[in-house]
Image 1 (cartoon, rainbow, N blue to C red):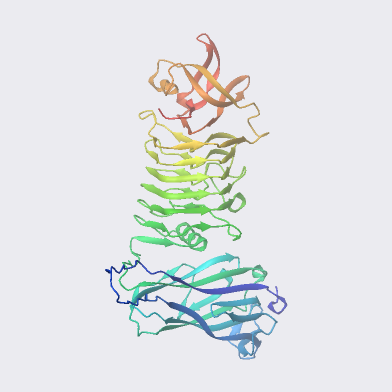
Image 2 (image 1 turned 180 degrees about the vertical axis):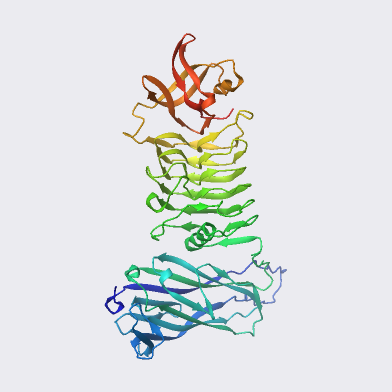
Length: 511
């Protein structure tokens, strides 16, 4: 068992205070020719947040202490003078707007206040935002209390409040940050940054408070991670809209994304609205996940899922051979799903099979998947079989051939890489293969778009000496029947040489 007295956790935490000020609109003064001098000055919107009254504490051994480590030893916090904790770490306020805690060790704590002051000379409206801006592994180890409430990392946004020019001292918010005595070695050499912002506008500007009943607001990568964890834990967001409020970058955060399973609870009717923002450098890692289906979402909801107005750039959905059905956005799609004004660019999506830049596999034969005003470009899609620039595989039923809808979609400059040495060792070729279909209506689904042949990039595998085409690579997606739809391949009407397995059709464009 580790003794905490030997742990030196070189942990760095900062809390930064910022101001985002804007004056909405200006008023023009019209004058005629005259000799009257008119002096004009504009009003000032100035609401600021500053940190003050920083106090440092370090745990000291105490026979009757209330703090107990994992070995049963007791401690109590003692105030330490200056800017240094007992073990040499430091805490200080710089420029009044940044509190930096450096080289904290278990049992270090600080308290301070955030003072919000109105220095405006006109009426203003203001709100505050508290967010975990970056987290490189330390945040979950800290105990953070702000204004008496435990802070869990979700961005907290206050309602807009109106202030008159004579309302100067607005509020004083107590803050406590502690690396508890029980913190383990996993928090060594980690860091995080918390940001407390004040936004202010002039008093007659139009503002709206957030509708938290029907919406969930995501400002940071930490917010996105926390939301995903809550979904996987079974929280329902049925008929709610997840609002992306800023560009979100996972670059250099150390955060590894765990695919979100929207079927963990009833999330039918959910909407992911990017509001025109970009999520970049999101990465998954196959060793952290299990089962089929990976992407930003492992599976969509059983009801209508809408994903709109969002771009994903530089994603790395890296599932190797450990995961089948991998999409740049969704692994499995069930029910009707809509992508509207969505792009996936400069990303790498890798898995075993059924790999697509947007979707791994549309798995409901009677459902409809819609792409409108979407772009898939400059992506690398890597797997062993069934890959596409939009989807790896779209199932079709015997009653409804193909329910995919594509409107104003751009698919360009994507690269397909075949995992070599696993199952399909032939050369992927662009072929126009004659097929022979039986008189059975079921068999006729092998001629979805071409009455006498199937065209696209195929790689044959073999059952004995008979080729059984299984690996297909399509600019858009691979349309897929079932084993009753196998199409016989013939060099001519009399020469049957193999089969198109499950009537896989490469869809490279939509007429």
